[in-house]
Image (cartoon, rainbow over the protein chains, first blue to last red):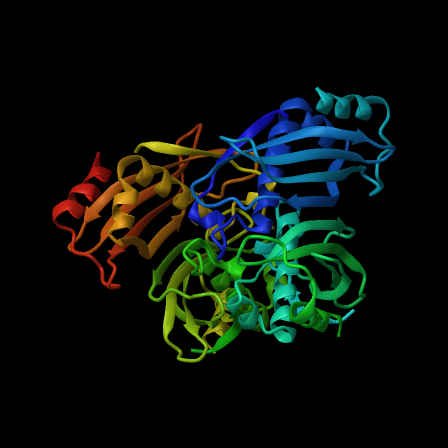
Length: 133
Length: 133
Length: 133
Length: 133
């Protein structure tokens, strides 16, 4: 997996138990999704057509607690392009050991100007397929 | 479903798109889990035995965007008691229409003082079964 | 002081030190500001005129750490109406003892459709003076 | 000012108004404080003596709204060492123009093992003075 985001865990990331809170992990995943999408896809071209990314499902496994002071890496790969949806595979790993702290499958649709999930075909499919690289 | 938590959506709950952010939903679910657990289970008794609740998986569907100004209700029911884990079913619904904004299955284990997932039996099972009421 | 917001401190409110994090306090203050503003002022009337509330300064004293499990109350009073700004006095107190956990003076302006701070006079002043009640 | 932290503003940093939320700014300031403290001061030496950093006041000016897509820098300088407290001056500026988005004076004490604010003298003063470099 290709890790683009590096985060040093501070006191404000952690909760009462001294570990990164469940909700905060979703921000870490979101950070890497944007870093990746912006780098590979011309988002302005999509926005100009009234197309909006919309997360419809997140299935996240919390595998190892991350204590304050640790540094983690966040990575994202393309899992699957469906007819009207796309699934990404994401991981948060400890920088040193590469042990997995959390992994998730994040599924999104691309909503068109009429509020419907766009079919993955033509130009749109071409853009999304760049995520596979 | 029994809704214990009521939240009025403010500007600081929403993100750039004017909707409640994906990560914030997890805080809403967490709020209702604690409200429910504290009410039904004697948490001090568990803590005294070195037992800690640990979320291991969240599978959340984002079904309808929640705009600022709306009021939502959060509810939790027991989905399943496994051998070493418990699954809760959670919902966030619009207060007026009861339309589902998001639902989730949240799976947790109870880690004992040795760091292992406790088996759901005896006194512990009795405590956890109170969640079914 | 008139306390409108009651918050039970959960694990996800706290940081590594087991206390409510500095940034989270600002959300508690914001919650009570909105609860109060919505109750006293016809915000839609202001928005229809292109008027927007904009916080320009927050001066917050952290007086006592709030541990997980405590319940706090948040209150807001009008401190001062200036020529082009309004200062609110806000407090977070322990529900039982009324000891102050944090207090703040929050200063905001009302930006008009041209991006300028509106002068507190006429109809606008009348609306804002309702905060004094 | 010496800027150590660089943050690209994402959708999840912003609130309903499309700007970075007031509470989130405090996380940006906290991030840079830790980055700086860890770099200059031997925190383990302080912790070993039972000494804890405790923020007692934040006075923050919100000067320019930061929209999604912008990149900001965060910097910290030593403002003043008092008898029992230290004041830091912090800034969030737009990376390109260096215009100030927000600035703050953050005052902290160092609480000793007995729960009292330590006097800035001897070894402790020597450590804190490193922040001036």
